[in-house]
Length: 274
Length: 349
Figure 1 (cartoon, rainbow over the protein chains, first blue to last red):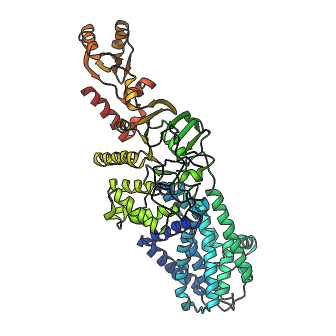
Figure 2: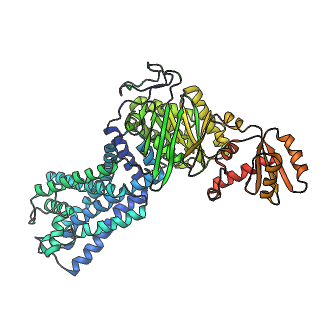
Figure 3: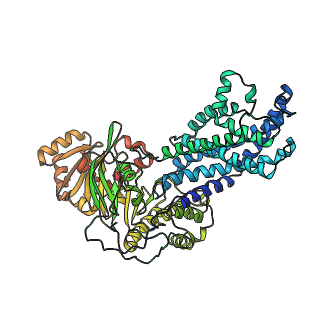
């Protein structure tokens, strides 16, 4: 098949497949994160501060007790805070796509015999892991807001957090892939991030939203994440959607976002790759 | 077929012998167009196995575009290029396992150790387990960094980081190594080491090495050169053959009015004299005989004069009619310095 110099030792195996390259890209993403201590500290402390300050402040300003047995706003705000942690971590980890591109690291991956699906999968799973772990660390505080988890509900919370993380990381990847500056990424992300979160039911319940805002919330995939978490954490509270419907919606959202990220990364162009 | 993923051996595998003279890289009528401008204008050349091949050109000559196309990062507008028999457009996946690429930009991850960088790289090429470990140790030994394998790359000097880049590119034992301006930012000692290593690779491993450069002294070390200018291949051959074709010597004269002097030389001596950077330049056989004649002919007009053997820069001037570093190229700090240094050096001859 190939013409090759006979004197030179064997080259690499015929196919690296998808899993090994995806694994190694995932591994790098995670190792890099934990080697930058400032990132770790920031990601854990800032949402905690945000939850306590904002939750306490809102709690005394207006009451949202109507939404079933939740006495304090800090309780209501808890699942929304968890989603916020996941949202910020997930999307911002994909800033590394832009950094990798500018540094030249991405180039060395692109010239390797690696399917683009493996690149997307590895990077996205890396971000997903970081976001999901950060979100789950926040669960340590759940006893303080009177949440008592069973093994089953804990497992479903992990699944929900994973799906939300995966979908949002893939969204971050899709936004970051065509970009060459982290400033531009910040600008676009802020445009997306705040409305996405504000209209997810994290701050105020869907049932209290009026008119068109309510429709926007229905259309927001994050709503189903917040809703699923709230149902799992406060089983007595009435939920707008049944849990399976929420999880199915999140699954479809995650698949769609991955497909989008893959489609963008799989284009070969006549433009410079970096 | 390529070897199976489970059987990686270091011994030369049985393969059909390559017929002599078959090129490892074949570039045919390659055209690349960015919006308005043609970055490559129908470039064709071959690279032979185990050849140290240079792509020489100033900034904007198209060499980086060519490099991107050969490394499968970009699809050309038209034309074709094959490496080891695989087409860069139609068979990028198969081609990628036969090439090692070293970019000008740093591709190593500074937060990882030398070993981790190579471990990661090996996985991308489907290497794993004991084989991968053996290859990492082998390649780290070869680039002289085995004792630093557990250190993070961020603690390395520029020269050591380049060696890790090279190790990354060679880990999967490619037949072709592509390097984009590999000595950028290196001190002279590290530059010399890198070039020596490239020569060892060619001689001992029979790797075909393709290097882009804008430095004449690096180009002179190549077996063969392709000189690019504004997207066109202006010269192709060994450095010796290219400089020989100029024939004779290059004479540079400084005068109060270079244009007048050039006109006078043309009419009196029937040679081609051009004005370049306020100097009169002419290529002539037996320059040592021409010198007394020309000084005699225009007494008091000539302020200084130099005779030199033609260099690759003279080849470039001969083929393109302008200097290697034009005025706007001098804006690039390193490039500008290089160009000036070269021209003063020539006057010293």
